[in-house]
Amino acid sequence: MTPWEAVAVFAAGVGAGAINAVVGSGSLITFPTMLAVGFPPIVANVSNNVGLVPGGVTGVLGYRAELRGQRERLVRLGAASVIGSLAGGLLLLRLPAEAFRVIVPVLIGLACLMVVFQPRINEWLAARRRPHPHGGPWLWAGVLGAGMYGGYFGAAQGIVLIGLLGSFLDEDLQRVNAAKNLLSLLVNATAAVLFAFIAPVDWAAALTVALGSAAGGFLGARLGRRLPAPLLRGFIVVVGIVAIVKLVF
View 1: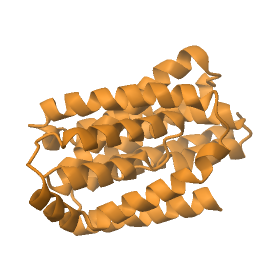
View 2: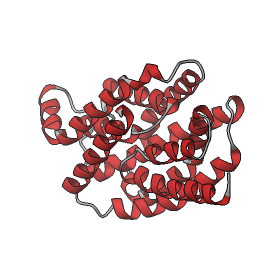
View 3: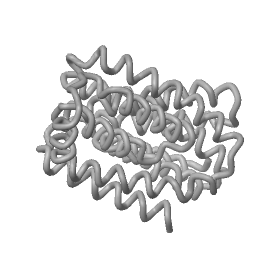
View 4: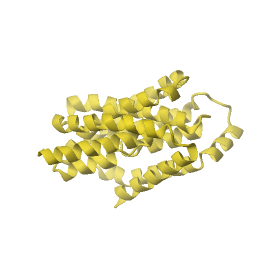
């Protein structure tokens, strides 16, 4: 990278870290930036994944107050995230990108609808099932699938997780967002360890993204925790729509 290219990748890392802490979809900033400065797609994808891990750490630390009381739940769901991430990371090296190009926008669109109608979905589910503090087997399976997607590419996995967690858990949106941050971190960290051994990581690019995402995750957490639930929900949906447009066109 030239110095100016490094600055562009760092700035993209800051933006990605901030958006990931509040919503998810930060890869839609860093991944295209890395492609624009000349990295091959696979190298850009895996280097971006490794670089976003520090941003996930600062985002989780910023939401630590909202994580209180969720330990047992997140241990269960975290296992699904780790297993799914390993599977998705292995698929990245075996399947063509076209296999997910059609599925991913549909998945994000469904997640956005789940976020919009989360209060009504919660009421509907509560009337038809026994309350489950951990979301039950369907949520575990959904988190497993989100982990597979996150290990494969990861853009907008946060929106998918918020849609799932918000629909199956009786929690306010900020505590759901805190859980999303931790599960996304587990997915990215697991994939990063896998990629470090079997994928062509560009460590200079990964470090540049890491420095930016760490700063962005801290700033994003400070902002996100202050947003009222309706505004946060609206922001999530807007980001989701932008993600669909970018992935389709």
